[in-house]
Amino acid sequence: MARYDADGKILYFNKLLLKALEVKNEDIIGKLSTQYWPDGRYKEYEEKLLDCIKTGERKTLNLDATSPENKKTHHVIHFYPERNKHGKVIGAISYCIDITEKVLLEKQVEIDSRLSMIGQLFSNVAHEVSNPLMTISMKCELMEERLEKHGFNKKEFSQFVTDIKHHISRINQTIKSTRTAVRNTDRDLFQMDNIEDIIKEALSVCDSKIQLSNIKILRESDFTKPIELYCRKIQIEQVLINLISNACDSIRNQERPWIEIETYQNEENIIISIKDSGAGISPEAQELMKGPFYTSKPPGEGTGLGLYISRKIIQEHHGEIYIDNDCTNTKFILKFPKGT
Image (tube, rainbow, N blue to C red):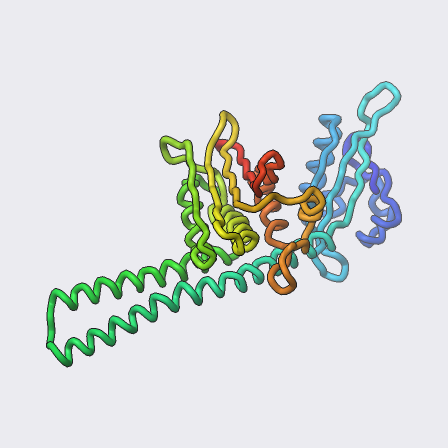
């Protein structure tokens, strides 16, 4: 905890703060933070403090620092205006909360989630690549056989080449989609992207799961023209891959499984809903799903990290993700604000 006067000068640091910063009260009392640390490390801190004093409003700052052991630390700092009995702001008090362990845990969760996704997508790549490779191999054998028995036939060979090119293109698309789905996107810029294109890419990545379980895909959209979402495209694609993949896993043993994806809008929001032929999710399970590591899948088939990371991504897009409990089936809603 720290206390400051109306000019932002230090009045008091408690023992924990003195120890963390390796300073003494007598050395810092009466000074601005930027006077004692002129290298600029606490410039943003002081700006937020002075803003709190000037406006008389509570302020919050996320601050990264380096410990005396040269380790990176993460903190949330809350600034509260201090007033006299007449209500005049005479200074401010700040409270610092160390969230280093929480940040490190979240980063590890993200890494584990990405590794889990890579593992899940490996079977998709194996299936999507092995089938066209087998076809290409058969076409090449046929070409050799025809050459040996009948000689060169331009029309027939032209068709063989066209077929081979088609399957090579399919392999390239599978590799491209998979690389896109698992790469780190934290530094991607937000930009306007077509929602329909994002959904198509996600469905492409999940195609082998969909085909393997004979799942029918239903698409509904009320857009009369392409609608663009201000987003990190690959992150939204990753969220959709997770939801579609989970839906495939939960309904794969049904006789007639289906997944319906709807896109629509109102005056304020763009909405994507993903509904499947499942019977919904219990309130108890929904509560557990809010944290990491919960999964309803058998051991070895899921980490419970996908939905946790998806929720975080949607929050970073100032959106919402929730389950529609009014629906008799399992239905997830993604809601994003319009514009930038």
